[in-house]
Length: 214
Image 1 (cartoon, rainbow, N blue to C red):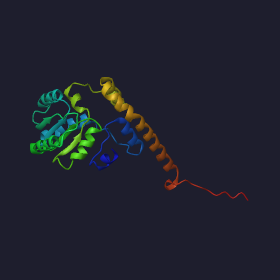
Image 2 (image 1 turned 30 degrees about the horizontal axis):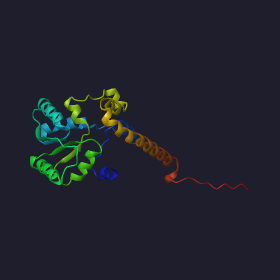
Image 3 (image 1 turned 30 degrees about the vertical axis):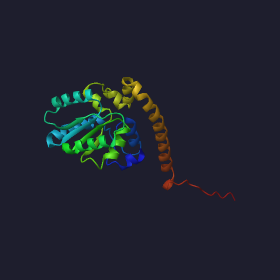
Image 4 (image 1 turned 120 degrees about the vertical axis):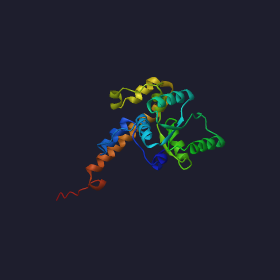
C-alpha cells in the first residue's frame, strides 16, 4: 500500500486524524479533503468547464439514485457513464472491457468508489490504461445517494465520522477499523516521538558531552 500511495499523483487527507497529524508536523493550515466534498466540488466545476464524469463502483440501486440526484443538483453535468463493479476479481476480458468503455466515453474524470484499499490498488493498476483522472471517493456514493447519512459536522470536526459510519454499517466496517485504527495510532505516536526527538537534538544526532572531573 505504501508504494501505491507514493506513486499517486496527489494524496489528500480524508479524515481528521490525518489532518491533526499534519498540523502537528508543521502544516498548520492543512484541512480535510473528504471524498464527498471532492465529488460535489468537481461536479460543480465540471458543469462550468464541460468536463464529463464517469461514476464507477458501488451497486446498481445506489447508482440509479445517484443519477437521479445528479440530474436534479447538476442538470448541466455531462455524465460519461455510470457503472457498478462486482466485488469479485474481474477476468482479464471483463477488465479490458471496463477500460474500453471508460476510454470510449470521453470522460475527463472517473470517480472510483470501491472502498479503501481496494480502490487505491485498482487505480494504481489502471492509471496508465485509462485516459482520465482517477479519483477515489471511498464511501461517498451511498451517502450522496441518501442511503447512508453523513455524520453531523461536529462529529466530523472531532474526528468521529468513522464511529458514525461504524454504527450504520457495523458488519462491514468493524474488521477494517479493527485492522487499521490501532496500527495508525501506534505509527502516529511513534512518528511524533521521533519528530520531537529530532527537534531536541542538533541535526537529529544525540548530543554527547565529555566531562572533565579533574
